[in-house]
Image (cartoon, rainbow over all chains, first blue to last red; front, side, top):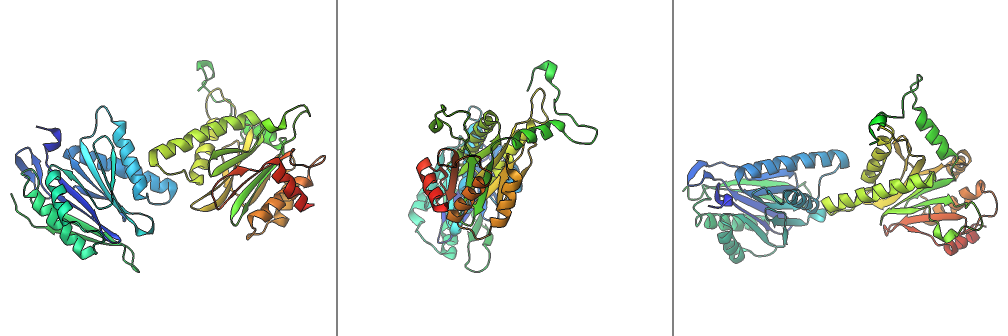
Amino acid sequence: MSIFEYNGSALVAMVGKNCFAIASDRRLGVQLQTVATDFQRVFKIHDRLYIGLSGLATDAQTMYQKLVFRHKLYQLREERDMKPQTFASLVSALLYEKRFGPFFCQPVIAGLGDNDEPFICTMDCLGAKELAKDFVVSGTASESLYGACESMYKPDMEPEELFETISQALLSSVDRDCLSGWGGYVLLVYAALLTPTEVQEKILKGRMD
Amino acid sequence: MGDSQYSFSLTTFSPSGKLVQIEHALQAVGSGQTSLGIKAANGVVVATEKKLPSILVDETSVQKIQLMTPNIGVVYSGMGPDSRVLVRKSRKQAQQYFRLYKEPIPITQLVRETAAVMQEFTQSGGVRPFGVSLLIAGYDDNGPQLYQVDPSGSYFSWKASAMGKNVSNAKTFLEKRYTEDMELEDAIHTAILTLKEGFEGQISGKNIEIGIIGADRKFRVLSSSEIDDYLAEVE
């Protein structure tokens, strides 16, 4: 039994046209027993930056608390929000600090950078960054997610289509993984032209088993 | 900091509420060679006198204006060796910031950290305050910026400032000459004229130093022949 499979998780982030979406499952388990069906894995850092953390749930929560702490101090000192690329470097550095006793979580970072350019990346539990232009996945369902995303993804999707695509990819992948599922949570952020950034959060109903 | 017999701060308050050591440090700055900085609309220029103790000194080996990062430069008035220690520490802090965030350090952050180091030395055991005031000039996402940092650790953002021997005359001159929409080239000329005001002897590319940074965000020190060209323009 791998420590990464103790709680079960599924995370995916995708890039669209001036928008991004990040989605996760909602199951929290203790090996084979399901303990919660509303577990939050995607967290907001600021209006244009979100992080999802898969893997061991306690490490995901602690990692999130540390990152919020660091980001709040950064905001106070520098009087600005962190850019997604900068945040990714920070996450990578924090994970590597624990190189010989790591946090057992794999982050998925999604945000809007300068000029509303969507940015996504993932990294392993030691902080090895993987930037991608299309999608990134993480969690116990990652292999299914890779397959689903690869076949369903198209570049430059509009927000509505991106939402559909990411939802379908998530739901079909978690159905093939007994440790993740029990619904989905999708967050879509798009930089609308005139109004400030719009955010859509939706809960998905999938197979509840 | 300091060994056990000197684990108390040597900088202590006087009854009037002043830190006398800092006042003395400012005196050391005030008797140092004049330096100045001017923030233009599209860049910053810093300049300093480079009076060497003897004609036998190889002036090409002396550089008072130094880089902290590719887009931030610094000039000092006061004790040269003290400024080298600060530049060394600040360079390290700038690189640590970059290593963490993979982003070049904003000027305000570097100034803040340098000032914190200077303040540390006014409140630690067995050390004395730095005998320099620094003028930090740079260009980042917030445009051109010029900061002065004092031995006490206080820092100020300036449109134009001077330090050292001729400070009051230089500042008066700058107050008259400074305009908000000055271009970098005008600022260089004004800097030279300001230095010339209090200069003893014949000014030339060999006894002043000028550093500039423009919208290209690359701080560089002018060569003595470039300075001679500007001097010719100003005559």
